[in-house]
Image (cartoon, rainbow, N blue to C red; front, side):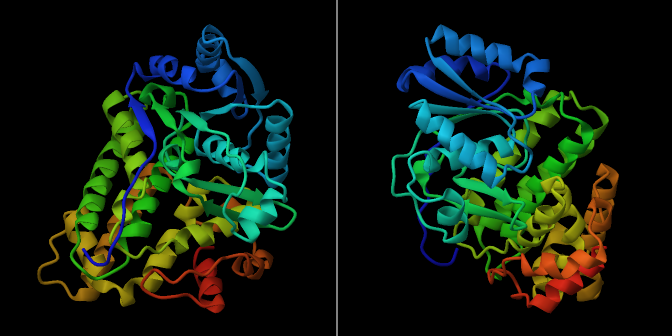
Length: 388
């Protein structure tokens, strides 16, 4: 393990089929007015909404409804939610849904009492909150983003064609999150597999960096192996509790900062994928899937040892006797086979990208330097073209 680091996680988790009952333990800690955040209404069809409203009523909470959070929450929706929170003197925000609802709730929590436009302050200037922050809790219904146990929040601005994430401090992290794997059963396959790949790529973004031997990479490999096994079970049997519980737990640990300790991290697949999403509004996990292999094949020569390790330790490939190039490529070939078995989108053209968008998407891509090679603008253009 290289360097110095600290690790602290402020979120309390309740996990399992009976987890929702613990909402009764948490709600008394907060004030009367609760902003109930949810998406397009699926929780009203599957009964989760009624169960939560019943618990809120039993705890004598006043409910301020904030539905309609879209899969890629927008700056306009954020401003709307912030006004709603401030006008109603909201004491607590309860997000019920997937990562988009959790991301949105965190953004609202730091925006309700913000004197500046929240998009400009947090997503353009990347400033820290200097105002009152409303506490947040999450009831998770989709596994993928890890937003239930981190301080990240991704917001899209369609007018500016930008999709940007801000990682806030621990004070913005959910105070608690409730994770019942059964709540993920009703997800359509497309959303489930997109979430699975989002999890996998979160791990890859932290794994494919650095050359030293460190514990974080061993943890990452174990998480990837668990996810690969459980994902193949879940696509065939979506209500397999063991598989869905493993996927949900892996999602949380993939992005609660644990496996990034003592490491540099990459995040360029996310930067490119988010730029694609800003132009297409496509499902986040699918944008990542569509650009991943061209990106990793581009950077592989600069981090070949890690890609060989990936082939051997994650995919159980016997690389003895192979050339370094063949051994490194074998892991990516195994990854591609798994992705296709899940039914992931493998081309950005299938998400609505055309040639006329390529340069704009490249311009919207934030270039980071934590991976094996810092990209130039023309590198991003070439990767996008390879992804078509």
